[in-house]
Amino acid sequence: MDLELSSEDQAFRDEVRDFLDAELTAEIRDTTRRTTAVWVDKPIVMEWHRKLYEKGWIGYFWPEEFGGTGWNATQQYIFLTESARAGAPPLIPMSLRYVGPVIFTFGDDWQKEYFLPKILSGEHYWCQGYSEPGAGSDLAALKCKAERDGDDYIINGTKIWTTNAHVADWIFCLVRTDNTGKKQQGITFIVIDMNTPGITVEPIITMDLDHDVNQVFFDNVRVPVKNRVGEEGAGWGYGKFLLEFERAGGSCARLKADLAHLKMIAAAQHRADKPLIEDAAFATEIAKVEIGITGLEITERQILSKAAAGEPPGSEGSILNAQAVQYNQRMTELAVEAMDHYALPFIPGRPFPGANEWYPGPDYAPPVMGQYLNRRATSIYGGSDEVQREIISKMLIGR
Image (cartoon, rainbow, N blue to C red; front, side, top):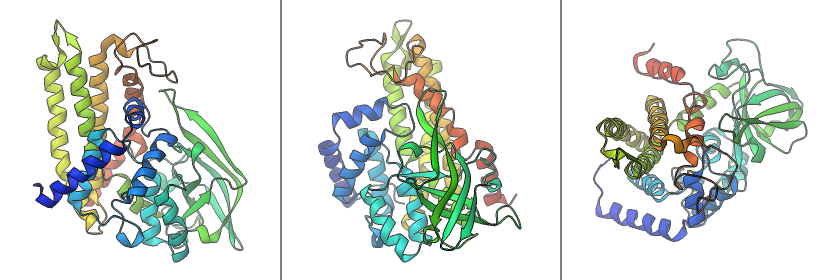
């Protein structure tokens, strides 16, 4: 991937900037900046999704035959970077980045014709049913069972830590259809309408006091066999394919935007009558993060180049995910340190004031503690840090 922008790329960058300036409302930017959860609330992010869909830019890394943009790796990089810099909300990946590629790669004609247009338009909002109470990092230990009954599967079991299940229309799940053989065998990939009788969603309130994740229960849930993606029992391979996309793409653009915000906080906060960013020790910590992100950006560009060539991310996806999580967590730690006592009065669910109606600190302070608490989980839910390192080891050195 060429690191220098050609005249055509510069023209494309200007087009992206003009679109962002025209379509990113103050409400969308402000809500994104103040969000403590990983994903911006559904109404706001789907408003942005709709704008991109109408522009024809929503499937920015999908193949053109399925409604993608046909952008090359450089254009994808420009779009992601400019979107993050402008304060656009990250798009919900469960549909566009996770289940969409599984369907257009392994799905049948009906699934492609039915689901893909609705994913692109935003008509279907998805969640992911992978983890279970006894199967998190060891996902192959899953027990949620699907038994064949004529033209249907009958599903019983539970999924946990299911982000946005309480607002989702569909869920894609790994379920067990056979208990013989190795535990990675007998797993099937299936998509389920969340309005199907027998599905119950129970909220889980995390330590940042947000409601993002849930436990989903399946009690004799009847799902048509036509909702199975690919072959029965081959779901483990499809799930691994999906996880490669989960761990790739767009991280560095967001990290760079977060770094710019951290620098702004450090410049505004003072210690001993001088800006904190002029403190040698604090500035050194920021510099360490910035150097790491700069190096990580090269890995992400390699991944984008692979995606543009129709290749999965491979080990680079896990490398990117593992390191990006570390830098993300470190920046939230530094933000809390910079805010000092203003980070303490953490009251989630309260409106963020425009004129400090209840909050004693500056208007950029209220989300800091919530973001710090929420990001503690990022080294677990996308694949624990230890598992990521095992994957990298096996891919690169075979053990």
